[in-house]
Length: 273
View 1 (spheres, rainbow, N blue to C red):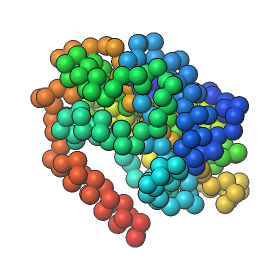
View 2: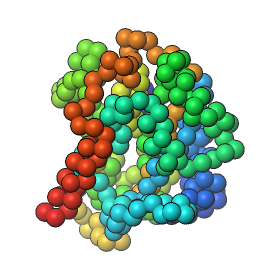
View 3: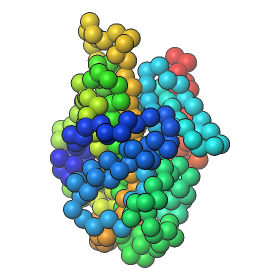
View 4: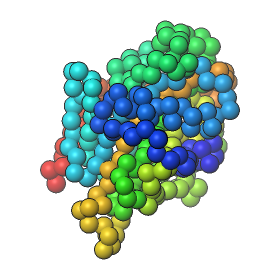
């Protein structure tokens, strides 16, 4: 399902060693090894680099917290009710800009063999070697009970012909929404946020969607989840015809900084409504 629709549900029992979702060290030691195993099950292609970055704990009762200087704790935020994609790679001028953002927010696991090459090597592989790279989101319910309220919902877009985001609008007849009510803590929802290969469905829009409440949807069952992104570079060369990161790619009207300001203003406006 991951290759065909850009998303997948992976059965994955909670790690034997209890994870403290608010502490970075616990994520590094007790959770990332599990995600590495999931990635090895999902992809048969050889991976030359893997980095985990931008961890976030979300919940209906949580507020936005900025990353602290000591970098010991995981940032928090409320649920995201606005439909969005996490990373518009096309908004970056060059791959080094993407890597700088990843490095700044990276959760390091130095014992992983995929982290042995430097970001300079990664940039060279992408630019000179035209290697395929992707960004995926790994989302998990971390509450004891299945999700009852505002479940994660993902839009898997389909485009006519060889078109892809942002060069065309999705075909609404063939695109689909997927909703994940009753998601448990023993499964991980994996979905693409970007892939350099045009043929791979990616750039999946997502949000939390309110559903009709039932008797069990009380304050005890308010949603609480954890998500983290993976930056993966494959030992596969992308053809010029299918390269979404070519120098001729469509650039956004807003710069990356302007886009960020616009999104912050929209989020603040919605909060005030």
